[in-house]
Amino acid sequence: MEKFDGGVTAPKGFLAAGYAAGIKKENHLDMAMIYSEAPCQSAGTYTTNVVKAAPVKWDRERTTAASPVQAVVVNSGIANACTGEEGYQYCLETAKKAAECLSISADEVLVASTGVIGMQLPMDRISKGAEELSHLLSPSREAAHTAATAIMTTDTKQKEIAVRTQIGGKEVILAGMCKGSGMIHPNMCTMLSFVTTDVDISKELLQEALSEVVKDTYNMVSVDGDTSTNDTVLLLANGMAGNPKITEKNEDYQSFLAALYKVNVHLAKCIAGDGEGATALFEAKVVGAESKEQAVTLSKSIITSNLTKAAIYGHDANWGRILCAMGYSGVQFDPEKVDLVFESKAGRIQIIENGVAVGFSEEEATKILSEPEVTVIADIKMGQAEATAWGCDLTYDYVKINADYRS
Image (cartoon, one colour):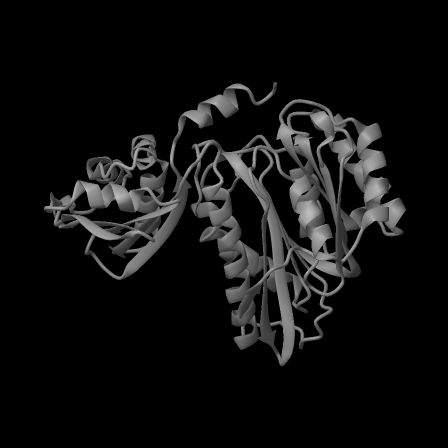
């Protein structure tokens, strides 16, 4: 498997575009389109929030149906959430307009939105945007990058990846783009993720693979403890790689699953590291657990602790906050057996052994915690299970960004 510079247009047959439709202020790029030259099998996972945005409802109906999908239209700036029947009809209207321009059926068009909740979409701009996007579609790397830019809200950088691997003697490519920075919490987040692939695979296994990978990627991310109304991960497979169709969980399926995990764990970590106001990606690995569920709960509890996140921002090896967060997680372990280690590109340092502080250098710890990517490893010495969660530090800028978000 090889990672290379690419975006959603990297797999065979996929085109993309971005456009400034005038939804955002100052004429920023705010609409994107992904299109496949061949009909795609589709899969999706969505927000666990009871309050679900109109596009989530529309896409879930499309991805659970047997009919193929060929295009995705995305807008940023307005979430189309809490907009009632009118908002849902706007999804239909957007799909119809895109379908008309692309000469496909409206049922073959998925839609996604991100931005301010409670506002209705300006459909004159959305319709014009869909039409313009259909003319701008391109298989180029630049087109993929433009599309990735257009879906950003408070993100500070584009989030893209492409990998190639061999399946059934054929080169297969998986690629993705996503957005997400705030209102991020485990079991999805204020995030949109779009993954494209030219692999030939059954719809049932495509959905099963995505559902399995999401558990260990996006569902292990938290920035601020808020679960959004719009969270969506869409996976499109057009079969143009020409590999023998994957219809069972054989070696080819496992190869696809590994590549899908690589794409999505990269995007998930990009979201965590680009948390609103963040200066560091904060990774928590819990090892030596009795069960995967125990490790998941503990690692999530560490990265969601505001006190721990603030300590990471201050480059402070305040290990008591981590042990405390583990203690209120709701799972049982022996705190007097826990080892804690911090590591980054600047080095590795043990902080506690068997629940008691060791004689470590505060200066060395601060140096390690001053890197843009920081990891804490907690060994609870109960078994062989482990899990990793991703978050970020908590800074002054997080409050500033969210206090001014609508203005």
